[in-house]
Image 1: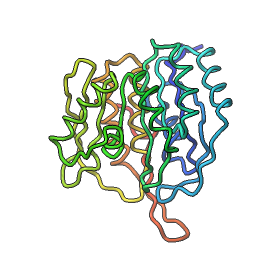
Image 2 (image 1 turned 180 degrees about the horizontal axis):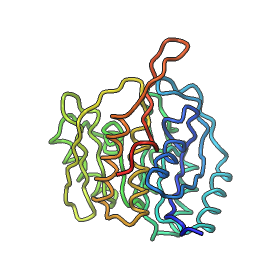
Image 3 (image 1 turned 180 degrees about the vertical axis):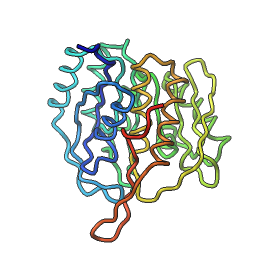
Length: 271
């Protein structure tokens, strides 16, 4: 019998097109040879081009999934994705508070790539008050960071200020993703627990009709933390993995003639 691999839990929504959410997380965990567990919060009918319906899983069922996984497995890391409502955030946070030793990656999923809202309005306050202060690292994109801070982040100089402001506000490390800035390379900033800022750059690979980059990146960070990496090392591995999934992406054409790009999660060469 071979030895058991590290274990990571994702608490997130299910994406029927398998580009984002639970499906993207599991493919990413598999790439890093980490055993993936799931607690499903929502069933989402979506592709990269449209979010057609969001059906939340009852809060008590989400809580029971999380509680059972916490009791049953030696978790090396946890990540949260789409939590949908304040009630979901409160239930998940209550369970995670009892296990502060487990690294927690919070991807504050608020807005889909299509622009559709993925959170009920009261959930943002619950994130701020309950979940984000429990996180090891928060991974917002620029629109999410703007929502959390209540200000615009128009350029690279403002990005560094925002990352440090978020770190101070919530007491967690912050990986601020700069992919929404146009005409510059993809630059992400990590403000760690000591306030040191680390820079991670990658070539911009514009792929219209794709989604799941945030889920993939946060899942990769969780996987590397479960493997024992420090946070800066984990982010470096995750950023390299995401770039490779984008570089090796492929596309489909729908019956309506729309292009859907799919990240090559889980099958890119292991480095």
